[in-house]
Image (spheres, rainbow, N blue to C red):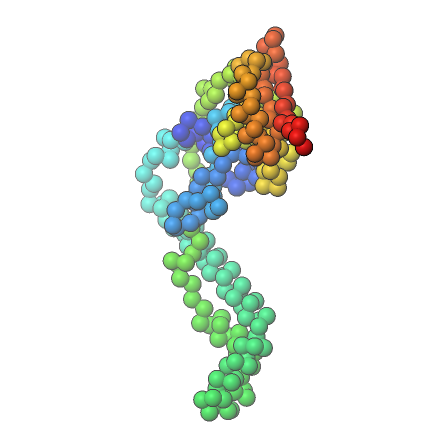
Length: 275
């Protein structure tokens, strides 16, 4: 699998790679593209998938992906042949959208054809066209819908970034994206090796969020705080644990062992003696 180097980290532009990362390797990333002409929103985000620095580094370390830079080739001005190929592919996609929309409109019309037919017959009868009303059939209704169907390109789905053109070059990027000796990376790597789904926890005042399954199906069960030492200051302990209670999650403090070659975890739960 190839990750495209952008802004110092890896990006995925291929939907199959995106799904493989999620379903096979438990790497979530974040969709940062838009399929909405009004602008980007979290509810309608689309490809590409942006990975964090530590997600990118983990995929490289585990041999799952390689990081490549395409800046040289993708910065070139496309020639006329490439522009023509892109236009033909773009037109083909619009035509496919038009065909799909027409087929769906005909299916929906067929479901309610009896009501539509009665409505058209009543209208003709009100106009005094008795013969036309008697001759009108369901096939006539469907033919009218099909023959008068028009697809306005302005209403087409916005094209989202997808896999780059097959004929392009890339340069292998071998420098480290993230410090693999840092404690934060080691904690993330360790949790991932334990089979956990792990994402960034900034929104909850933590370093990581841990999920019991795919985040699309489950809420996070734990927030993880990375500590440089096993000692936890009382006020920080109270603040983090109370926060975890408010968001209905367990609070986990992670730190390196005394030897420094392993990661230790301490789970803290809030207890209310009055209950």
